[in-house]
Image (cartoon, rainbow, N blue to C red):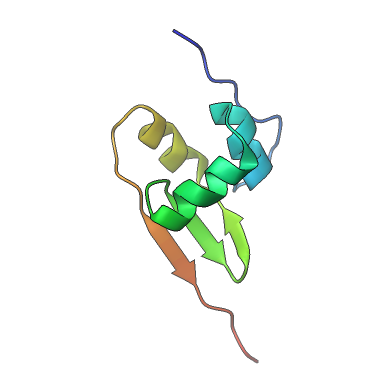
Length: 75
């Protein structure tokens, strides 16, 4: 069994590059899985971000994908 390595970051949310490295997949796969709704993600405008705990649970098969859309604020 291959062990997944954590991204080397202190950030609260992971980026597409962090997820690709963690899961050992291409960035295009991360985008496709996120768009399909199978990989849990957070859309912040045009950006994709990922909750580390949610990704760990998803990788263990403990949760389905959940896409969250955060709308921008206007002042």
